[in-house]
Image (cartoon, rainbow, N blue to C red; front, side, top):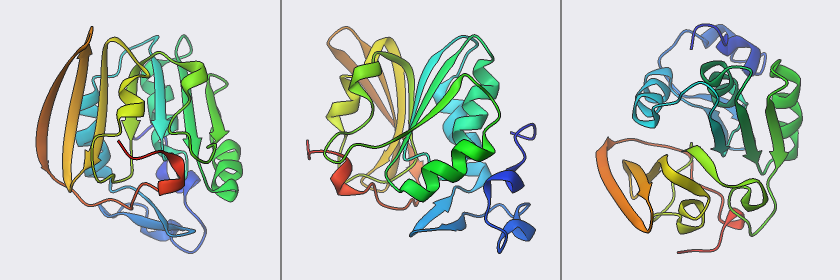
Length: 182
């Protein structure tokens, strides 16, 4: 996480707070996630070199850049964000050509046209398991996402899902125009 300097992904009014272990506002009702929470999520996600990863609710692009760093130049990282201004600012901040930031399509969660993914990271709170993303996981794929105020890890093995719960966390809500409820 240190290689991707958080300051590059923050608006000027909060860049001085970059070292705080706290979520920081990035505008539009969104936040740059708390570093310790990002570290916990990445540990659960088990990223690896050459992975195909999806970052849902990418916000400032910081977690997308971290995924790109962990996956390296042989990886493909796709990020989706609904707020156009955040899409543009994150594209400017990310310096890895293998990380692509997409404007989220209203009513569609993730990037089904680019699936399957080895890893999916969701950085916004849903009410329940976003099933549309499960369908975008490849075989033995892992998704880490908060829903119902708890962090969850989902591993797909064929038609089977192994779901584990990993403590309480707070996130901004997953904007409902991003997906159809499960």
